[in-house]
Length: 306
Image 1 (spheres, rainbow, N blue to C red):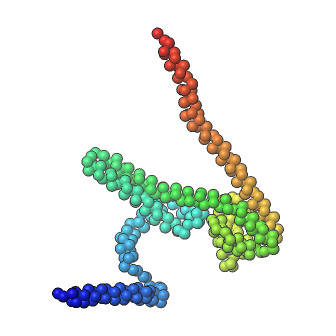
Image 2 (cartoon, helix red, strand yellow):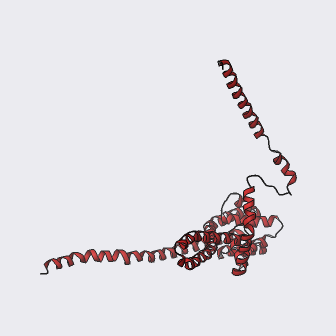
Image 3 (tube, rainbow, N blue to C red):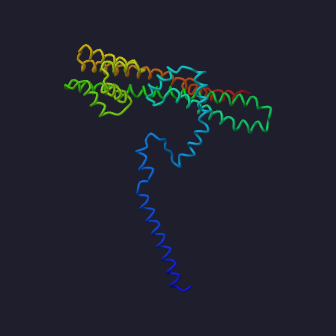
């Protein structure tokens, strides 16, 4: 082939490739048909090609997981306590969703213990029964670990609430003392703060804006919180709103009480840490000191002994 023919072929190929690229780029900028139609079909279930494998997997394992969750619910019970802890942890989960998560943790722990157990049992069939017991214990440990994780989440959130509470109470007191109503003060504090206690105040403000009386909204906050300090704060505000007590004084007193409680807790923690620090001193450093003090003398006695 001549040079002209090769140039024609190369130019045609490059031009065709550029045209295909430009066409694909133009099509990618246009919304797909399913995206344009989806707003008019909101009530219909939608799925995409990427979600199909996951949907198939969920459909395959969902009955087993739901059955395990129902079994845990029948065995463990305590739905009211679990719902209360989920509310205190501010988790958007129902009790059934939490039981499903417990089942998943238990199944994963069981599978993690079952894989090496099967490999060991192939080489040593005598160990099959003890290893089966280990797998069962691993599944139970996974279930209990998820519940322990929920307790840790509740404790961490409540520690953060205690750290935020004095500052937000002071801000509310300043806003109320400046002449704002309680609802306006709540709105101002919520818009200018971010945190766990602020999230609780957002729920109170949402209840008030949907028609719930202010005192009842604070009573709900006192009922769902697990902290006595926050419960006293909410109950004090509810009583102050009902009886017309000056709110600024109530809020300042509540903030002072929380700061004093935090100071006492810090002193108690320091005292416990001081006792804990004695353990390595008594059982590690002191024996080494005694050894270093008496070893030269013992060595000298051994040298002079005939």
